[in-house]
Image 1 (cartoon, one colour):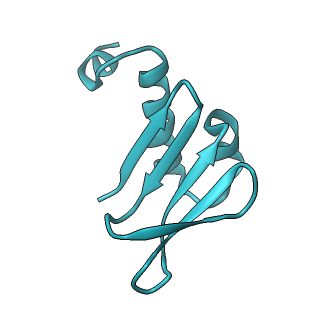
Image 2 (cartoon, rainbow, N blue to C red):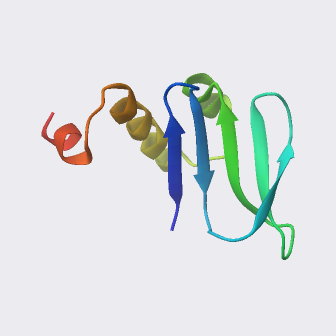
Length: 87
């Protein structure tokens, strides 16, 4: 199950593929990779300046990028999932 977090005040997004103990490995000022403490496999990403950097990245599938984009729009417009679906 993928979990998406977005903070509109910081334009910061996290995408996790699994929930488990992890650590972050900063790749650059805009990207952090989260790895499992058990086996060092990638379990998620964090994107600073997410409105731009997330879409420049090739790390996520197009469908996952779309899901994050919807989360960003909903957060910026303060819409619930139901309200966004009705629009």
